[in-house]
Length: 300
Image 1 (tube, rainbow, N blue to C red):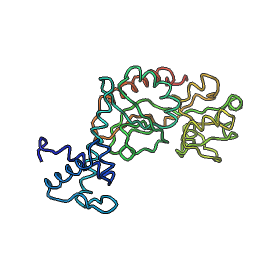
Image 2: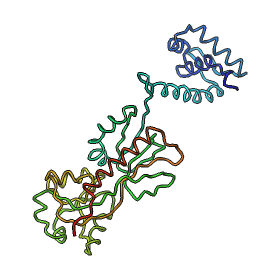
Image 3: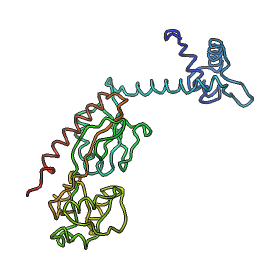
Image 4: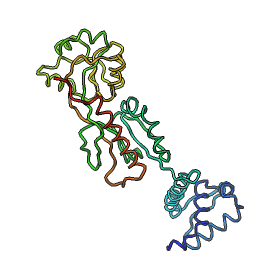
């Protein structure tokens, strides 16, 4: 059917009646009389040559043809409504749904969000924290910040910053750690990313001691446990460098483990919108500024 011939009023009447399965409630929603609503639906049925409802004593029941038409119309009307809602005071606003590794969100992103909102007031950022396991399409996300090597199937990945891991501990514990060998006598706080401690010890030419105790699904929990004197943690320096600067944690050794980086990701199949573009450039700029402070190679 050509667009100029689309019976929009009749389609709105049918979609409302299909949601409510009640002509009276649908008529109230659309601010028309029940008779006018029924007339619009009959005209649509005559035009299509099919029945869309069966009338029953307690209301309406969709026919197979009506049930097939409803989701298409609902998506179309919802899409138009969402788009119109993005215009506020004569200015277009874009919503960007961003998934973020929980520790990255708390320790790095949130303290900087005021700057982003000041620079891009027309972008509404909606953040959903995760533990690095993310399904962009399944969770309705436009973008996601995740930790890894940048290689994910069907994903466009923009590097934000390397995240070297380094040993951190509370001041009392750190005072007992004069050499990496001393870690054999310390509780080693573990991440769900198995193998990080083993890689760190191997990089020092050592055998990893037996690992026991709880496993945590985010770096923030490990940092909190370490700061409370519960053991030594292997933590990403860009996120927890400010804990070292404040004295809450100590970095007893200069050695680092290059385990991965943080990346901004989106589906290859979805084009980048202006709001997403603005966020990507801002994140990259903030990451470069961060790198100049915490990510310089350790002194030898």
